[in-house]
Image 1 (cartoon, rainbow, N blue to C red):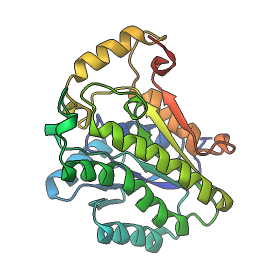
Image 2 (image 1 turned 60 degrees about the vertical axis):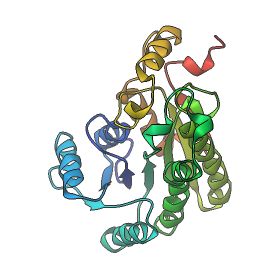
Image 3 (image 1 turned 90 degrees about the vertical axis):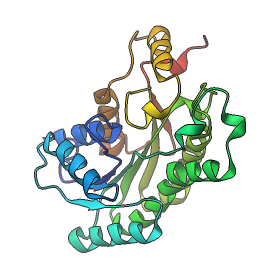
Image 4 (image 1 turned 180 degrees about the vertical axis):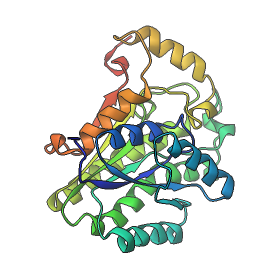
Length: 259
């Protein structure tokens, strides 16, 4: 018997088999969840995501194109979930974006308005937008989860505007938790350690960040996708029924260290 037996939800953010969302889906599926998926627009992205999902045994997945920056696309996808299934139990938001040009050491001050606003839109506002559309589908309550990173609370060289966006994401999660609590909908974030995902590779100095984290973490290693995926299962399952509005660090203890 799995922790997620009988639960259905949407997983947003799989780009390939290195994505954090991929590992979250792997753990959710292993615990009996029924997962629905989206991909960025375009046949190339659809094929890439479908290939990753086939490695998880999902040969005929519910898979829809979605541009999270488009309200029309968001409406279409969530309306289709309602039409196809009537309800859902969980939401996983694992998307973020900032123009790579501004993710390098010494470039934060130069960040233009458009790049700053785009980072907040894709990385933070979309969680609010998806939550808003999920609420009518969570008639029996539910759980929402988004992925953050330590750069939201500390300055990480090169993380720059993405750190600002993740801070906004975590704050968004707390306000959602407050408003949705009476509906028995829990809202949390996981602050995962650095992982070589497609998004992370855009950050200047990623190798140095990972080397430093490994050396300074109490566990003496970097986090794995499974570490975070299994923690996500806990937060999305009924075992965490009293947890909401929290940001849970899954980073091998790095965030607990002073030096």
